[in-house]
Image (cartoon, rainbow, N blue to C red; front, side):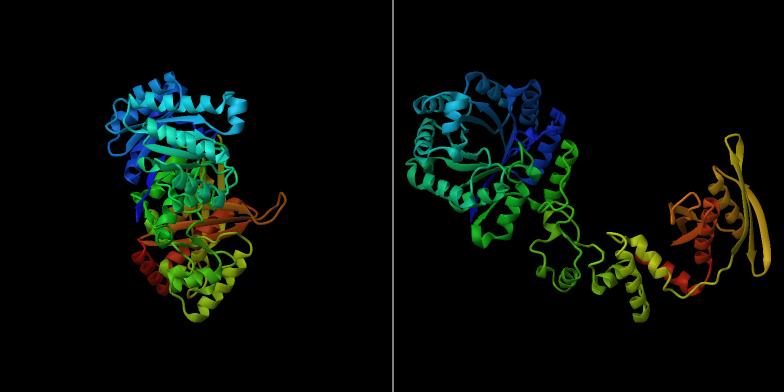
Length: 515
């Protein structure tokens, strides 16, 4: 197994992603997580670019122990001096200098001939070497550079003292087979290549950054430059988590490993996403919200029988909990029953069949079915409760200059009970009055209101969730008067709390299983 060096450039190239500007303190916070992640090199920034970048690199160099701290510089004296000054406090430091080598860059950007480029590259490495023993050289746009000239440049900079030679696919132009052959050519045709580590830095303009990086590893690259979540210039960089997990999942193919603690991947991903404001797409490999979620009934059934049927990685390996079976219209009976069991719900086969049919009908109407929906479905399949209290009358008074008050009359076993109470609003007053009449004071966990029909006379449906003495139940009520609907929903939930012993036993058992 070859040990691949993970060079993280989240704080330098990753920050070049539009809208991803980081403060020095935020860069330091991410750097600390990169240490926990176990990367080998942290590129802190481009010091000549701004005072803030220089400050960030210096803070990281002063604080971070363990990884090598790198800073980027063009092949110019002022750039190299600025990078060296920022890196001065680091125990382990690397100066990373670059110079474009491709024909299009030579002609239109630098306006220099090959020999001028060669002389400047050699000079830059020699000058950087005065500040640091560890010097990395990048021939910018290497993938579009003539191989013969590229080999000549690499040989010269290694002779000048470069310890790492980085091959950037700067504009994401390369194709995996081509890029792998480029690396293979460097291994075979640069005479002194054994004196330096071959690195690669791939961009994702064609969506091939990770593929190109892995092809390079297969053909001899010993270092990969990458970013957390694949953020970076334009379409981004090679994704650190995708490269690391590819090597972890397919060791027999790549015969390579890293020093990354993969259990820290999710923490790093979320921290970078939070601080940069760049949201991770749901279907992003490894760290996307859907990466370990299964909705298809066939897939869910397979995963429940044996995880490897549809999962090539364990979510725990990247710092997540269990895989999630997302309940939707494609879900099957096996996943439905497993979710109910996980919620502490046990139904007979006939009741399960009825609940599953209702679940499928509901799933056709909404994308995802949540646990609260399942509770409501299953409660209807439990032994029917006696409706202890019935709402006979409700009247409320409220206004900007009036204390909200509710008067409620309930019927119980043929007798009528009536009381009134004040509250923060008419709904709160209703609920306090019902509490006085029933002798209960449950906690209102959730309250929701939506229109069932259209128009000014729409029917409003209220849903509530109450918690009382370890039990939690839902209640529903509907009326064209939302205050009445609110009272009916609350009373519906109260009846569930105080009715049939079988229901109470069930609710208490469920709460004991899932406090």
